Image: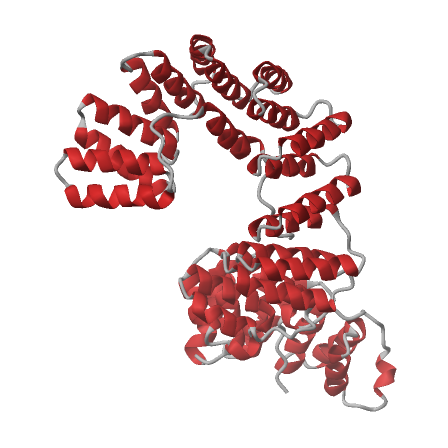
Length: 522
C-alpha cells in the first residue's frame, strides 16, 4: 500500500490516542495504517517506533512513521525518518515525495523543488508532484509555469483550484477560468465565495455574481455574499437584477445601511431617482453617524438639481457630524447652485479649516469667486496655494482657468499653470483640453493637436475638447477629421468655449469629496 502525505488534501482530524493493544492481533504495519487513516497519529507512532526499532530497514514502516509524525506536527522528526528510508533506497519515491512536501510546508522551496523535479524525471505523470511544483511557481508569480504543472495534475487539483484559476487569468486565459471553477461544489461556501472575489478582481463582474449567489445560498450568514453579489450585478450593468436581489435581501431581514446605499446606484441608473432617495434616507436612519450616506444622497440631489432636499440632507448630517469636511464641501456646492455665493464661500472656508492640507476647498473657493466676478481674488489665493502645495495637479489647473478669465490675452503664466497640471497628472484630461485650446489660439497647431487628441482619448465625452480638436484639424487642413470631431460635438449636444464655474465646481467636488468605490468583501 502506498500512502502519500498531501497536507492540504486532507482535513485536520482530532488527535486521539489508541493503544497498540487495540490492534487485536492485526499485523503491526497494517494496524499503523489504520491508525493513520483515522488520524490517530500518537498511537500509530508508538506502533511504528517499535516496528522500525525491530526492523530498521523496513522502508514502508519508516515512510509511514514519517507520515504519522507529520500528522502529529513533528515535521523535523518526520523528515529524519524519510531521509533514513532514502539512505536505504534513494529510489524510494514515496519517501522522497513526502520529504519534498514537508520541505514545501517548512518554506524550503528550493529543496522541495529539486526533489519534486527528481520525482518527475522518474515518473513524469506524478500528479502530486505537479501540484506542488505548480504551487511553488505560483508563489513566485511564474504563472505560466504554474499553469503547465496544474494542467497535469487535474485529478489532485481541487484544493488549489483557485490558484489555478488565478494563474489562468494572469496568463490571459480568461475563457478557461469558468471551466476550472465549475469543479467547485455548490455547497463549498468558502471556495464559491473566493471564486467570486477572484472574478470580481478580474472585472468579470457578471461571471462573479453567481458564485456569490451560491455562497449566499449555503452560508450560515448570507449577508456578505448577498452584498457582494449585488455589487457584482451593479458593476456588470445588471441594475434590474441588483434591485431584485436587494429586495430579496431586505425581505429576508437583511436591512443594512451599506446595502441601501449600494442599491441606490442601481435605482439612479434605471431612472428611479425617488427610490434612490428613499434608499439613502433609509441608510441614514439605520446608520445616522455614517458620513457616506449623507454625502451620496446630497450628490444625487445635486445631479438632479434637487437642491432643497440636498441642503436638508446635509443639514441633518451636519447636526450629527458638525466637523465633516465632505458635508461642508457639499453644502457649499449646493449653496453655490442656488446662487448663494457668500453662504457657499463660508462652507468652503470651514472645510479648508477642517482639512488644511486639502486643496479642494481652495479650488471651490476660487471657482466661487470667479462666479461672483472676483477673479482677481481667486488668482491671488490660488497662486499662494500653488506655492504651498506644488505637487497638487488641481490647483494649477484652476489657477490657469482664473488667469484665462482675468487676462484679455492669456500669457506665459496661464500656459505654465496648465502645463504644470498636465505634468503632475498626465491623465487629467481637462488640463490637457485647456492647454490645447491655449496653444491653438497662440498658433502652435502641432502642440494643440497633441494635447487635444490626448484629452479626447482620455475623455471621449468631453465635447469642449472635441470641438477644439475639430478646429485644430480644420486649421491644419485635415477636413475629414475636423468634420468627424464636429459630428461628435453635435452628438454630445454640448459645446462650451468657456468653463462654467458652477459646473466645474460640481464636477470636481463630486470627484474629490464623494465616497470611494464600494469594495468586494474579503
